[in-house]
Image (cartoon, rainbow, N blue to C red):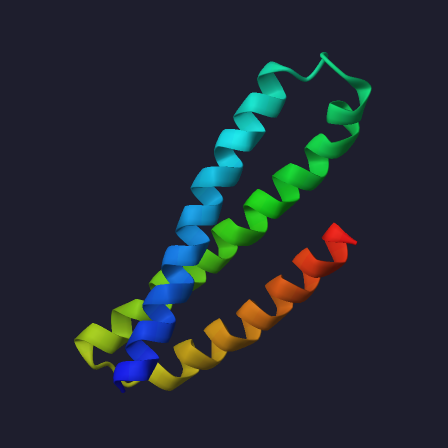
Amino acid sequence: MNFLRWWTVGLTLLGMAMTLNLFIVCLLYWIYLDAAPEMREEFPAVIDSTLLFMALAFIGALAVIPIFRRNRWLWPSQALLAVSAILISEVFYRALR
C-alpha cells in the first residue's frame, strides 16, 4: 500500500507543478501575444497542455482522499487515475509531435 500512496501523491504533485508552470507560461504568452506570430499559433496548444495537467492534478487529488480515509472506493479511484494518466500522457505526447 505504501507504493500506491507514493505513486498517487507523485502523480498529483506532478500535475500540480506542471499546471502551475504552464499557467505562468500561458500568462507570459498572453502578455506578449502580439510580439511574434508564432506565439499566437502556439497559444491554444499551451492552454490545452495546461488543462491536461490540471485534469491530472484534479483526478490525482480525488484519488489521494480514499488512501488516507481508507474508503471503499480506493480501487476504483486508483483505476481512474491510472487510466487517466495513460490517456493524458498519450494526448500530451501526440500534441508534442
